[in-house]
Image 1 (tube, rainbow, N blue to C red):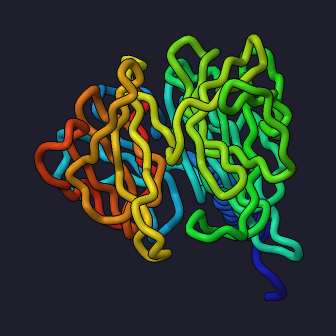
Image 2 (tube, rainbow, N blue to C red):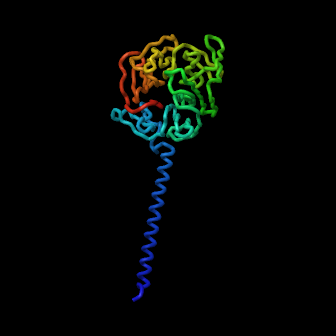
Image 3 (cartoon, helix red, strand yellow):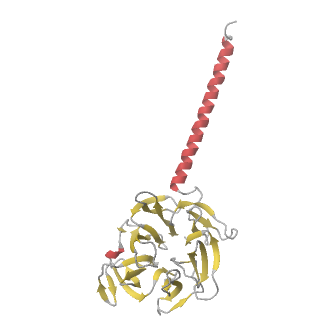
Length: 329
């Protein structure tokens, strides 16, 4: 006989059609999954990863991947959950986060990424230079970042910085803090070499502290955003970090001309202007954060350490392979 009976041919055609539809559905599902995965990778945040949660959660930048990671206080020591975006510098507070990224290219590009509490990108700002410092105010309203415009180390004199402030409530961006009127020794000060870096905001989101450098010296300045002014308070204060009660500042102080070990961590009482070193004797090039009213966390040689703020005790390793510590709550 030539060919199969009509009934058999119809059955084979039906089976073939079902197989083709199944294959098409499988391909569609796989491609949809790939697109979803790509969107998650592009946004840099896993679905269940965010700033909400119990107090004590520490967020850091994982040095092996560059991604933001979370360490839960009840988890095993040195453990972390990866889920955030890739950042060179990171900070978070009050339901907002700031991620500074350095992207390769000719020339290389840098960005400030404003993130919500789920660490999803809500705004992107192109920046010149190399990411250096990032800070979010306790309320999550005010953001600040510092970029190296030239050079890449505070240990040399051949560097220039550009520090910006962003108000998330109004959307107003101060591209360069050098515009702010500065008073030094009680007089208005002008100089072409003025550099700002390391902003730390007070609880009122108006007052702030920062470092200003000029003529080879560094100064702690207190700024007022509403009056748009800043005044120098004290010499030899870098990368200030205001305590939760706004009464003390942790900072790095230059104690040596050795470019490999120039700094020590200190704490300054703003009411008396008395200072004392903490128990960390190694040179720390970081803007420390307060984990509470009594303890500082900071990055040193690719790890996050803690030390009591009152000068007692000893440094303690908190997380290896990590930088940019932040406690959003």
